[in-house]
Image 1: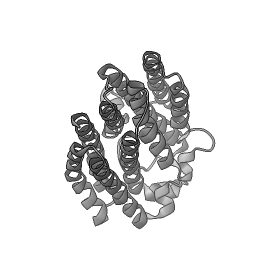
Image 2: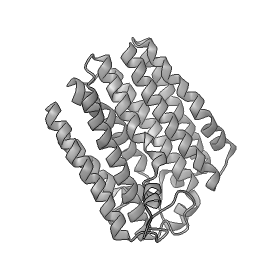
Image 3: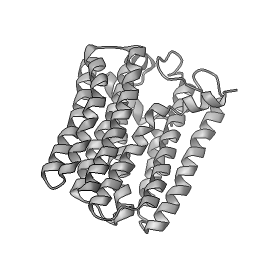
Length: 291
């Protein structure tokens, strides 16, 4: 039976900044529209965190029962390590999705944005079928598409909409930047796993592109958000330049990726990329609010 510490580790806490950053950025965009609402922001954060934990447990379960994690290098896996029964991990995933659904329903009711229920349902379905089902899209190199859409566009724009009742081009730029950083987190994870994924038949985007081009993609995914900050700044929100501080947090990860480090040496890249996304989202939100 898995210990509480193992359940926490199985939730992959290094990925959780990817859940907070879009809510922060979306709230900042709402503040730029003079419509930020702290209570709704907190509810959105709970929904986003619950979805991220649910995704992590769902991936742990699905990859574990397929045998993909049998020789995996990287974070602890509950199912693959046999520390927890597959059914227990599956139930944990759906419990997290349930929390996201209940809190999301409350957020939608308070904001009156009932159409977002469709986006929420699509998020849960996409989370499960990333590695679940008979033909998971994560095994066909489409994981980054899901991450960009749901942890970038939907998360940021949905947060802004529940507070302001509309979105702006600034919110869209922030959503694209956050989506790129969330994709960078997944690319870093998949570059580390190229050797085992290729053997197990998991054709992630990193496996399809190859290691060299995937490393270049990772760097590009960090550069685009920084460029978007400059665009946001020169078009009316100069304080958004605060988000460029996140480049300092990105540098250690970029160095490791460009040096060609592999395996366990890439695990700090996940940590640093997650931190960079969080710093980017929070400072961008602060800059937009100050503007």
